Image (tube, rainbow, N blue to C red; front, side, top):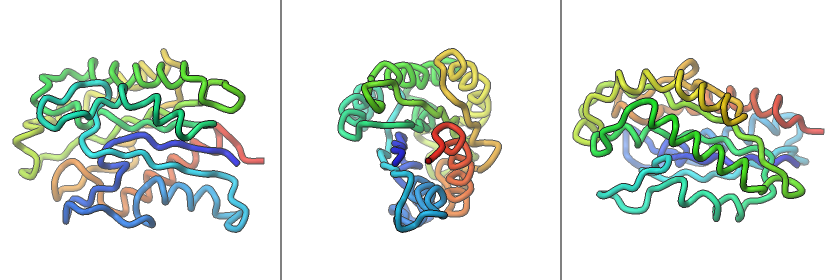
Length: 216
């Protein structure tokens, strides 16, 4: 059985932009991913998917308002607790867009690149090898009033992320997926995903996973 860890923020946790509650297990993209990957083997699954989403998680930034959200500092204990890992799918960077960080696109992507390097150096793959990494660039934000006080006018900045993510993925030896070419953020709050977008993302990640770690 291949093990995939989905490491992300509220969109991996499953934040519902309409209600602020959490989507059910069938809706969240990591769980939809598990279902898609095991569609042909429901009683003897070939892939195991672990969810590690945290609302507010950044790539490697200290949050002076919301507390311990530093994804890099939290990373190693989480990798160790789920090892051995065949693939770690990382989708972070949206929270780094918050105006409290005075961010630029290059630094956001570089922060996620630090995570990729740490994962590959962790030796938490099978036989103490390096896990493979799928670096997912989140889709651009959408202009909406819900989180305006935190994110300001982040739309144009978020549109600059894919090119830098691709650059750092190549430099770090990770696979790359531009989620913005597949899904879009909800108009309800400008940040999170509607249910159908979770499924579309899961399907795209499933295609990548099957190529990276084919099940026997």
